[in-house]
Length: 363
Image (cartoon, rainbow, N blue to C red; front, side, top):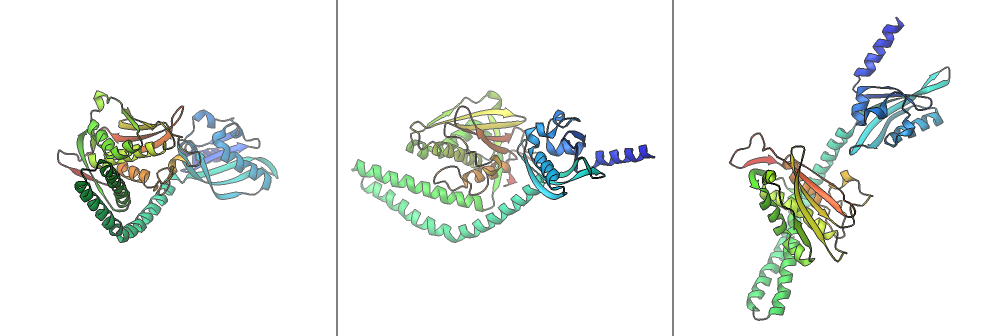
C-alpha cells in the first residue's frame, strides 16, 4: 500500500505544470520535476540530485527564500522572484519547511513561470501609453509642424535670395538641417503613437542599409562620424522587408551609436550582416561607453527609457515595434573592449502569405 501511495505521489509531482524543487535541511536537492527544469531553464546537472542550491549563483533567490524559511519558521506564499537566466525570468513561488515532530527535514518550493503574464501586462501598459501619447500627439502635432513649416520655407527663400553670400548661406543651411532634425523628432512621436502597417517585399539588403545611412547623413556630417559598412555575404544579398520602415529602424540605431559617442573625438560605427538560426542579422556596433549597468536588457526597449543625453527615449521602442512587425527580434549588449552592439534579426524566409505584390503585417 505504501509503495502505491509513494508511486502516486511521485507521478503527481512529475506531471504537475508547476515546478517542484525539494531540498534537505542543508540545501541539497532531493526532488526536481520536469516543469522545474523547464521554468528555470538551467543545465540539468545544476539541478541533479545531491547538488546544493547554495553552490549555484543562478539559484540565489531560492537560497534567500530557504534562509528566510529557516529563520522565521513560517511558510511563504505567492512571492515573486526574478532569475537572470537567458533573459529575465519571473516566477511566482510558494514555499514551506518539511518537518517531522518539529525536526526540520528540508523545504519544498512550488513555483510557476509568470514571465509570459508579465509580458502581457507590459504590452497592455504599452497600449495604454500609446493611447495617451496618441491623444497628446493629435493635439500638439500641428502646433509643432506649422511653425516648423514656416521656418523651413522662409529659410529656403532666404537661401535663394542670398546665393551671393556664401557665409550667410552656410548658416541658413545649418538652420535648414536643424529644422529637419526637429521635424524628425515630431515624426518619431507620430511613428510611436499611431497604428502602422509593414509592407513586406523582397529587397536588396545593401539598399536597406544605404538608405538607413542616408537618413542619418546630417548627424554623420554634423559629428564627423565614420560609418563603416562591411561587405555583405552573398547568401544575404536579399531581405524580405519594408524598406522604408526597416531602414528607419536601422537609422535609429545608427543615430544612437553616434550620439552616445558625442563626448569622444573619434566617432565610429560599423554595420555588418550575418546569420543566426534562420534570421538575417544586421549588426550596428559603436565604440561608445557601452550600455549602462543600471538599465537591464529587457528595459532598453521600453518607452521613454534613454541611455543618452537629450534623447526622447522613443527611438529603441520604435525600432522594436518595426522589427516585431517583420516577425523579427532586436537585442543589445556590450562589445569588447569597448562600446555596444545592437542586432536586428529578420527572418530569412518570406511570410507564408508572401507574394510579389505588397503584403501587410500589423505593427
